[in-house]
Length: 322
Image (cartoon, rainbow, N blue to C red):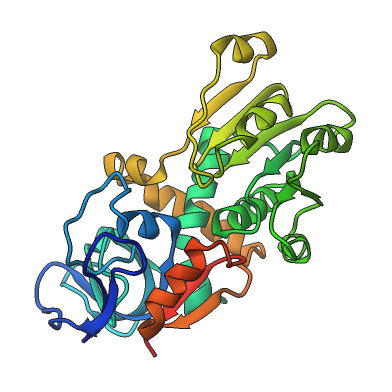
């Protein structure tokens, strides 16, 4: 079968589209014919040697896939031909992937494969972040940094589906209309003075929850935008810098900074995936639908990752073998 292989840990330049051995059936793993493979920021870190999980090349990356069951072991609860989505640390950028049955869920009705795969990393992580870590309530206001990317899009849509008001910050040219289209109530530019603009939108009170996948210089201003009792969710450090904060700033205003490590939490608590999946399914049934993703053929995996690395993507990127 064909796959995108990391030949060296140099980012997208180390990717090669090539032939790899076919997957064996008859074992304890579910084999899925891949129709869509999600491209996410952790994939980019992994192939650059910067992710917490270190994998020596060569390997096939890809943490999220959707497609059709090719083989299911007896007792797995799945059957050949079922539409499913699958979580896995590796192997998704290929025509087939093999994963444990516990990592497989049925794809939601009403979503195509590219839409279904869009949920697996970003939407699950944001549901975990907003519901379990931040305990976001329907009457609260959430501020989303990095709102035009996959994480930001998911944060906006999940927060809106939970009933919150959403203020989104954008720093990319031409991203305002896209961010508005996915449900943000207010879209502001990430320019000098943005913190004051956010406070003006909340009558000076500040926001209840901040979703920050960016880090870097924006972090300090994000803390200042928190209302009393507010919570800032640290998702990642796309800007490159890892900020620090004095505990006294948290104590004086009764605010909190919460780390969100969805992948690590799942690794230690596998059962949480089913709980979060049930919550996501409820939101999908109520109308949540990811925006149309940016699609690339599997053979153009390097170009897809280069686009993600350059910040040229609005929303989610998927690779399609056919």
